[in-house]
Length: 143
Image (tube, rainbow, N blue to C red; front, side, top):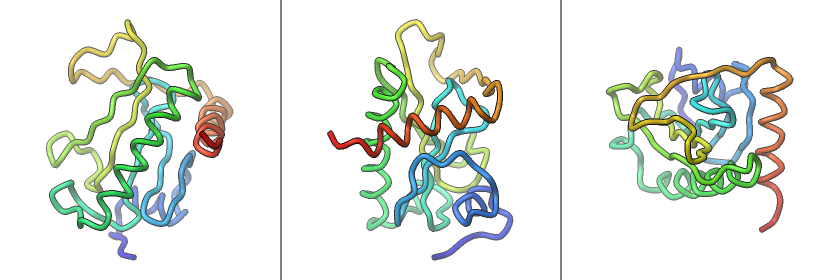
């Protein structure tokens, strides 16, 4: 497994940087975004360092997209969202140069317009942990 020194997401994957993990699988790790568009916003990262979607090896594509699909369902179940917004940036607007997929819970009238992403924060560590726990529960409950 390759990690890139100085990469925030590689540090989270390694457990050297704290994060509210919601998914921990052989190829993919998911955790709450610290500056969520809406609370419950998850970042999915490849366990192995990959810069962008264009660099993603084919064997890693399906585990990443399968995780995105499961998390998109989980944000609906965990938070009563009506749907989700799933996206990734490649180089431009990619704040951390490690491939990551955003999964954001959505509700009609929530105020998200186009690609303008207003950011919020969790009121406390306890609130963030509550959101993480709800997602973990939704992800581990058999369908």
